[in-house]
Image (cartoon, rainbow, N blue to C red; front, side, top):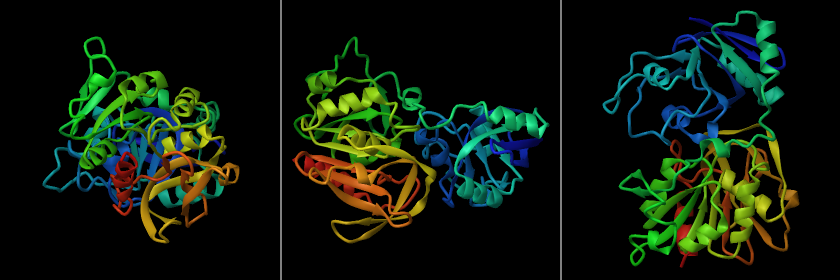
Length: 377
């Protein structure tokens, strides 16, 4: 089925829908990973975005029930060069096209993804529309210009789970707060494991798998959870998750974090890193086209080692606005020298911009979960 991609700056790309009729808009971005498309599709940090894969052949290993990173597909649309309908993998339970159709997500191919990626690199991530229904390029461009911009958009509130849950045996177990109040009695393995409250701004399942693998008992709470509630739970540590959108409008999360500074060790990843930066008085800004892929080099300034990392973010903490009297910069991106990690010099606080849990991606940074465990004593 013929389709059209229209960018807000007026450029259009003819393409083909391999999932049927539909129309959708959002911010168009690109990801440079060669594999892991199912993890990309289900990562809540991609909420509201039209994701372009730079690797040309997608769909060749199908989809399965093990590789999801949340309870649903999160991308607004999926853009690829060539869809592979004949999948082959012993773990596969279905095709990518059926998976997208079942989740009501538009997927398009037969599009020059190299040209689109170069255009985004030059012009920056921008608003776009995909449609099988609107054939007039000018009309679709005009529609793209009416979409809300990503800057100033709080998407964490749209992806956070409304109900707290435990992470048990590799899956979420909902907590009925009417029967099980959120206080110190919530923990089942307090004597044998470190207890961690994870604030869900769009958390990935592999983060929870990684925390559990380090011997932690994890209870996930919604993004709106207040500091008083977390303090009543009396965890050994607090984790701040990844998530989509602009960190600055997430004022409820920033207030909670500020109230928890110094209370217990805190570890923040991705959006959690940005919220920690705002909580300690720094500023954030929107990157031109963001960092999305699984091969980004980051230097650990403490050890001098270079880590190949998985990344997915469109905003960053402005390193110039961090107070050097209180903050130590620990990690720097070697592609553009943007901030990738920091510590507080006086309180137990660790913030990392990239994804040490991978999924997809390399495991160079997995040690950070062990570091969080050590912070909790």
